[in-house]
Length: 146
Image 1: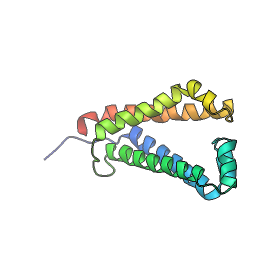
Image 2: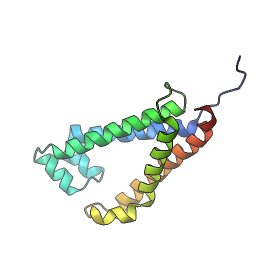
Image 3: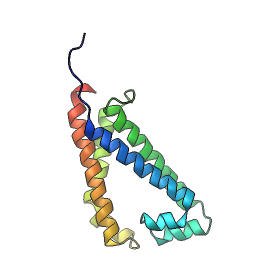
């Protein structure tokens, strides 16, 4: 019998919930269209394409939402809330790195998307840093158990 007490991995639970919320926000953009694209800072070009009925913004947003939902599942898997997913350790490291790089690297991304405000970049980058940090700390905590 295993007497080792398993503690809740709050870092990965937090990361999973935040990532799922981000996915739902992306799905909201698809459902509610241009006003949501504008509110969440996707840029005027994406909002205009959505208003014109073009599929491109919805397709890109659906891909991002799907990736975020998958990442959320990996966080919940690492927190032992769902079954262990394949390549869990690698996935948690990669997901953490992507969020952290996005959070730190916004200064290099900004010039490619000039429609977004500095407020958007600072807020979204801070969110990415927090979520990436939660994935990293959660992965470190869970490492020996996954």
